[in-house]
Image (cartoon, rainbow, N blue to C red; front, side):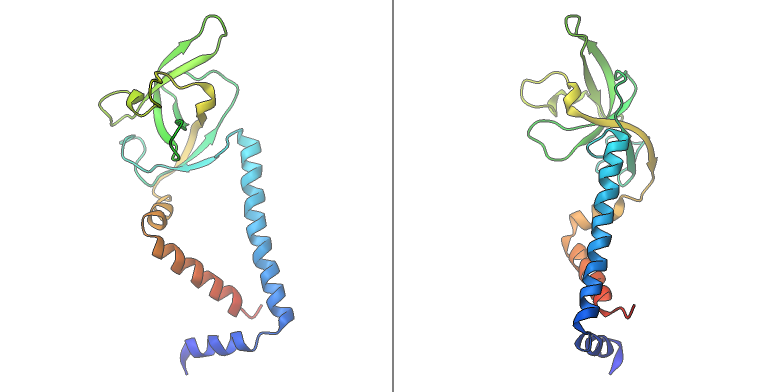
Length: 180
């Protein structure tokens, strides 16, 4: 009958109590992941404490697929820091280096100009139409650490959704057929 036949028979023989137990366990795993994510948001002060580098604009420092850990403190942002920012009208955050800082004399607020290390010019073409500087609310956090290449899993699942669905289906199948 083979492994697949055994798994199908296993699913057929699952009792309601066992099915509920497995569903609750899966729910607890998902809930735990969300709680950990929210705790990281509170600890780091960043709306997205972990991001994946999606392009080669920061090479050689960060390569496509690297995971960055972010932290957002009240300290002023300075030239040379690597920040992750959102631009109005764009979904995906951008990881680039601050090249200029402009402090407003009247309010003391700091505006910044960014550039990818591997890019020819500054990022003004990436900003919203007519915007010359990034403001504090655009910045999601400062890069404080990274893991090389680990983010490729995310990139592959985003670029090839069929892999994501196969993986989710396989994990769901394993949860349903587990005997524990």
